[in-house]
Amino acid sequence: MSLEKELQQRSNNQCELCGNSENISTYNVPDIKENGLNTSLYACKACIEQMDDSEKIDANHWRCLNDSMWSEHDAVKIMAWRMLNRIEADWSHNLLSMMYLEDETLELAKASGDGEEDENKITHRDVNGVILVTGDSVVLIKDLKVKGSSMIAKQGTAVRNIRLDHDNETYIEGKVDGQQIVIITEYVKKI
Image (cartoon, rainbow, N blue to C red; front, side, top):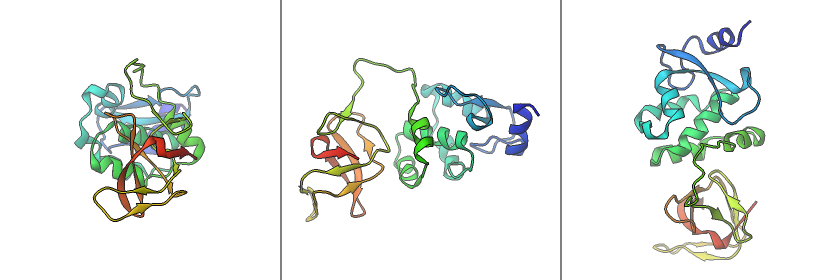
């Protein structure tokens, strides 16, 4: 059976991301060497255009990821993770914090080259100089008083599924004791 026929059968002839049933075609997940059923998905023209060109992203279109991010197929989960990371909206970050990927699948999702190697690109680094990316887990290396509250984030606290501040390389965001806070990168170590 051809790859396209297998994808049609797997997806029930619908876009595996948004559920659209028109203008559907095979989409190979970029930046992954292997091409096959595990690294391909069936997607509509609107999704493909936005996955391939960040300038065309319509955040409201991607609210569909609320459902498709739970797919049992790695290719769908990888593209859902990548698109949620590209969208600058609270709801997308909330979905990312709920999303779970196996370590191997997460590494494939992070392998996105996006073709945007820019000398001015902001790079977040922990206290040891290790590069941080969205979705990483870090541990606090000292007690931190949280401004605007009486809370103190204790040394050794693990902060999972961090988000990066796209405007400042020294800030990351994460949840500590159920509260979303901004943390300065010089006080964290990647785990």
